[in-house]
Image 1 (cartoon, rainbow, N blue to C red):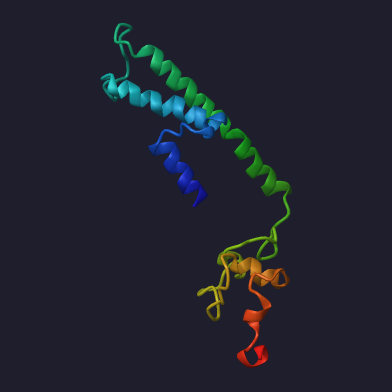
Image 2 (cartoon, rainbow, N blue to C red; image 1 turned 90 degrees about the vertical axis):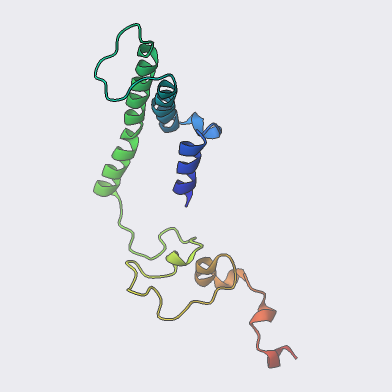
Length: 151
């Protein structure tokens, strides 16, 4: 969901928030927002060469520089994937960090066909965390008691 919301902010709103401080959004906007501006100015698409008097050279140069910055910003990600694949420890437990909140962290990995044998009881906004750490008391002890035990 985080990536979907980030995509919508970047793509639809132009991402003019604090997101512009990192190089991938800067490269993205240097590439595609400039192309949008060129399109508004009337630059035809799929033309191999433009004349020097067309007025498109400067913005196309900025767009090309943004594309190179965007490509260069993926290098740390590619290195991280390669390094994790070669030297990282495989995750052998269902919740490798131990603090998963939602139900996808409460099933086994890989999940069985129907995820759960029976429907899990949801008592809070963090059902998987409550399952792994019942001592945190997400539900008050009084509500766990049977009606006869309360008397």
